[in-house]
Amino acid sequence: MAQIKAWNPEREFLTRDELINLQEERFLKTVARAWESPFYRKKFSELGLSPSDIKGLSDLSRLPFTTKDDLRSAYPYGFLTVSRDRLVRLHVSSGTTGRATAVFYTRRDIDSWAELMARCFCMTGAGPGDVFQNMSGYGLFTGGLGFHYGAEKVGILTIPSGAGNSKRQIQLMKDFGTTVIHVIPSYALRLMDVCQEMGVNPREDLNLRIGYLGAEPYSEEVRQRVQNFYGIRVYNSYGLSEMNGPGVAFECLYQSGLHLWEDAYLMEVIDPDTLEPVPDGTIGELVLTTLDREGMPLIRYRTRDLTRIIPGQCPCGRPHRRIDRIQGRSDDMFIIKGVNIFPIQVEQVLMAIPEVGSNYRIVLTREDNLDQMTVQVEVTDRVFIEDMRHLHKLREKIAKELKSELLVTPRVELVEPNGLPGGEGKAVRLIDLRGKSGEGGV
Ligand code: ADP
Ligand code: ZN
Image 1 (cartoon, rainbow, N blue to C red):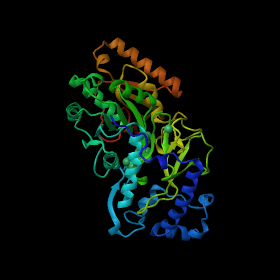
Image 2 (tube, rainbow, N blue to C red; image 1 turned 120 degrees about the vertical axis):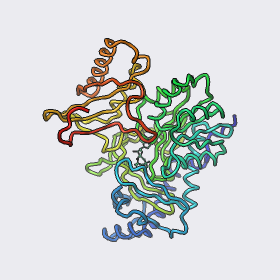
Image 3 (cartoon, helix red, strand yellow; image 1 turned 30 degrees about the horizontal axis):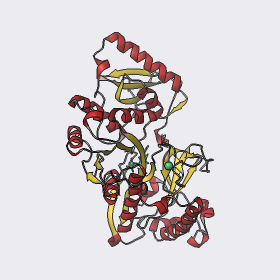
Image 4 (cartoon, rainbow, N blue to C red; image 1 turned 90 degrees about the horizontal axis):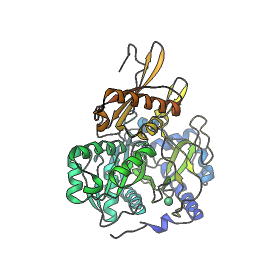
């Protein structure tokens, strides 16, 4: 199979100094361009700033942050820097955390986005000859068309299968000998059950070798499960609509953090409370500035995603720095009995237990003025038909392992395979009923 190792070696392997020079140049252009948008012109003017005050990257911190609320307040067209007749596409974010926001693309923006995605495919060893099944929602969600354009650019046969329709997905993989898939992690887990129902063993019956998983947080344990079950290598894919969509940061063959394409995005990691930068290696909120966007540049956009910069050089030699897997959004964190917890910490424990099936959720309630955390866990088929005594032991084992990781003792409920709600979209891991009066059980 023909394999291209880098789509754009010149941009992917420049020296760190060359990369910073390029960033500097693009940053100044971005600031000048942003000034053309009604939103930034007003915002900069209010702060008494004009583009000529910004002389280089060292002035970055003089610029204001942009938040999701800013995007909502200027919805739909307030961030545009070109007239509408120069636009060719819009996407709308999935609205996981509230009202949606819109992003616009010129033809050039679509091309440069596809270029970033093309790099991601090649960096992970995919290329012409592969068959790529894109199990991501097409339409307003950026995951579908984002991956699609990148794959076509590289010259990969692409099956735009979209989300859902599980049996058909597996049938398509069989019929066309799919080698590469893009899928959200919760759906990759769900599909395992469907394979089992259909009597398909992916390692023997399918041709898969690579999986791109992203769009929602997932633990290393989920990566291991997915790799083992399908017999593939899984690469983490990170992006957000506000920054085009997928292709912002992606793992290379070394699977040791996600290279953020720093010629296209300027990154900062800040303390979300003080808004000051944190040292490399420390977890904080990722803040991104577009460096190569025409229609809708964004400056210091607060993603609310928590991660850290991984210090040091990746063995692949790319100077684009790596971020660690996203721990969650700052608003995913919940506090129970004084302890701060992210759903991904619960997942890590659960997915390392072989009897645990493919889905779980966390339900928070308040009973007699005390917070209660209930973890609902699907068990595997095999466990489900075992006798009650075993189930009781399993429940205790899960509770004990969660307690030792989280320092809070949860109530554990075992659920039959496929017993928990789960759709095609991003998984809802946390149900917080504490604010609601009269809520007792679940
Ligand atoms: P929404 O914000 O409505 O979900 P998007 O579809 O633009 O809209 O989703 C982008 C968000 O998805 C990111 O900000 C991040 O929270 C999450 N996300 C994307 N990729 C990953 C990933 N690989 N790991 C964890 N979270 C991710
Ligand atoms: Zn690398």
